[in-house]
Image 1 (cartoon, rainbow, N blue to C red):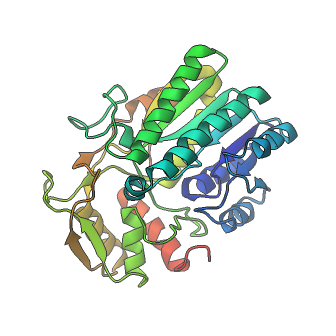
Image 2: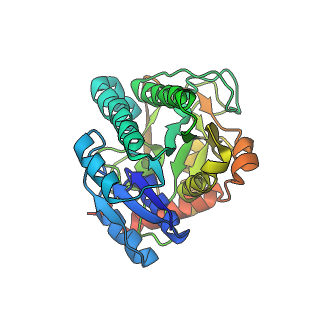
Image 3: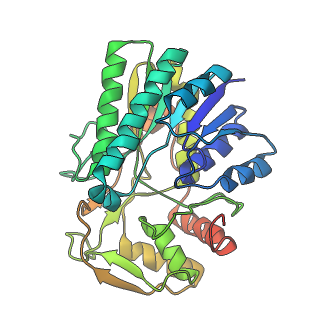
Length: 337
């Protein structure tokens, strides 16, 4: 049985991916420093799957700690989610982002190399396309970044490309996600942001559940149909499924591969709010505030390459994403607490 090490495995996407890996028959070792996640998510994954997870509360910058973990387990592949991920915050504390995301990844890659583990699936982001000249976005679009968070993802991609070019033993998959939302059907695991949510859907659902007074919409003067930002929202279970498929196919793909993960549909912020109200019957008061630095007008994916090479396609529609988000939020108004 193949062993996958998942960094950041207690987080939103990490916990859903861990669940699908266990269901697919993998042994899973999770490494997470729990700075922005809860161990409770993994307890619930174990309860849902009836399988056990080996967990280490370790920071990816801790070389000795990681080395010890790789010595204890015969790890075949790594799925790397661990890192800081808030666009706004990255403008305020860029050094922390460079330290955790870039230095942490370099440290992880060094430990993997020493342990003879040469397979990594990396959690990248559509932010590496900067402000795209057109949509939908394909993988061969020029890359740039409009904020430090996006730059860390871009730099890590470049580091991985250099590493792959230096040694053909490395097999790597870069997954560029668009906007993950939704939750597991059970309502047992979902997105549990600490403090004020940076992403739209948890913010909407926290307003709907009464935790927050109103939603802030950042700008309504973008060149889009209703003036609010347009994004490609993808169900977290679809996203997680792509990681499992990437692990299963990484050897056959060889070298380094890059895939967009999205639905190919763009929805504006106001469309998301209106659809949420329609699907749940809850009210979501909102106010229009200043644009956020680093935000772009529109961004959605052409994900046909992932369909061709990974045999993956997103299957959950917007109604289902919202329904699953609301089930999680209404059953867990305070997240995992």
